[in-house]
Image (cartoon, rainbow, N blue to C red; front, side):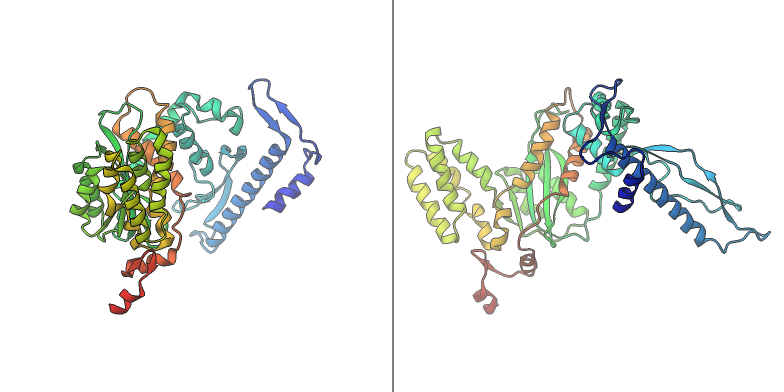
Amino acid sequence: MVFKVINAYERSEYAVSKDKVTRLKSPGTPGVVHDALTELLREGAQRLLASAIEAEVAAFLERFQGEKTAEGKSRLVRNGRLPSRTIQTGIGDVEVSVPRVRDREGKIRFSSSILPPYLRRTKTVEELLPWLYLKGISSGDFQEALTVLLGPEAPGLSAGTISRLKANWKDEQARWSRRDLSNRRYVYLWVDGIHFGVRMEDAAQCILVVMGATAEGKKELVALSDGYRESEASWRELLLGLKSQGLQIDPEVAVGDGALGFWKALPQVFGTTRAQRCWVHKTANILNKLPKSQQAKAKAALQEIWMAATRQDAEQAFAHFLRVYRPKYPKAADCLDKDRDALLTFYDFPAEHWVHLRTTNPIESTFATVRLRTAKTRGCVSRDSILAMVFMLVKSAERHWRRLNGIARLAQVIEGVVFRDGVQDNIEKIAA
């Protein structure tokens, strides 16, 4: 395909020199730049698309070439072309026309898999629209924002189009929330409750998020729901929903912050799942209880705990922190001490996974982007609207989530192999 485009470039009457590309601003559309090379690529794409559709039609006719009517005529014949239409692509509008195929008996119909009947924009552009909306572009500003990318006309990108897209997002989110999980196994879970700076139907509402790591080491969105102040009832309803969808095997570890609602609900639904407190949240909570003059030193002391190579070293650093800070700052020391066991759970799992298990940062970093959109939103946002917006952005970000390190170790975790200080415990294995 690349060589065909290059050849088209060499033959085209619009070919430009290597060191100069003609750039002309459209007088009618401020800021729109026409690039001769882009025009050339668009023409090449148009020819390639036409050739691909012709090949698809030829293959379709060949498949039925033995079919005859009662009069002995070929059953399927070409019958002109459908009206041309414009497809929005990443390099601008491309005009195409699909050949029409007629069945003399009226039962067989040709439909291009390359160019479905109602396609008006490519998948990359379809994905661009939710991103722009969720990034803060208002519905009324879409046409202006996309003019430079898609040409001065940018058809079909009105506020009404975005409203229809939002309705589709709601339907997609609703279907996703009812999907079957009976064939899924999540070894680790990360959970968090996300609050937005936007007025919702109930001021106490937040978004409850669950991310999971599959047996193949891939991170994916597991559950997304609205809750009431991260309450026990809200978390329990979400976790029971996962059970009802078919998720029957308890995850090995759940990683989260100090929201008591989740930790109370977890043993009621997944009784064997162990708790790992997020060190990023815990560090922030402790530092908030210290004067600024002490925070840098305290943060380094906390890092000595969770970066220790063994649990024994971590316990020693733990004890040192309590000795130093408890006399003068008892609240900071108590904040750390009360979650001692949950903070050190990761030592019983492969060392390759520690970087993933010590924090809920995968959720936090994703939702930092979501907040950019909700910060632009004025007025009250409905429950369904905010869920749909969040769902679309998270699913887009999901493709770029980092896989677990040491994927081979996951099989050992699933098998129940004992790890001590991140290393397989051979003594336990022999004893077993």
